[in-house]
View 1 (cartoon, rainbow, N blue to C red):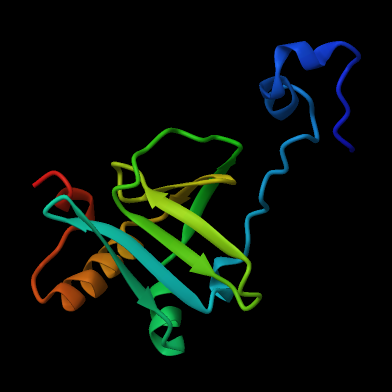
View 2: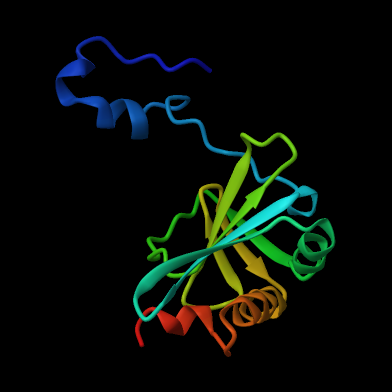
Length: 146
């Protein structure tokens, strides 16, 4: 469906076009996360933002294997801060998918909607990778506020 505005609607601004008219705001599709070939983890240490890129295929596969989605809720977008974010990159380098941990480590907020995981295994694996990189134990959802 193309984005078309009703006559006279320009006076109320672009918010009308983006949020009220179907087809004006293209929602991303939920990709098959198992197809990612690179990950980027954004986190904080002592309130300082940091990033870690994982591009080794074996390590990427090991991390992704812990993502077990129990349930999804499309088009739900709670406003969680970007305290701990995992970016999934796909073979077509221009394609990426942002997932941020909610305060509950089994919930991931994305542009697509919410992903509810079976367990906190993915969160624990991310903590393990970041801890190894930092040289000390790190729990990414708690670090920003220390």
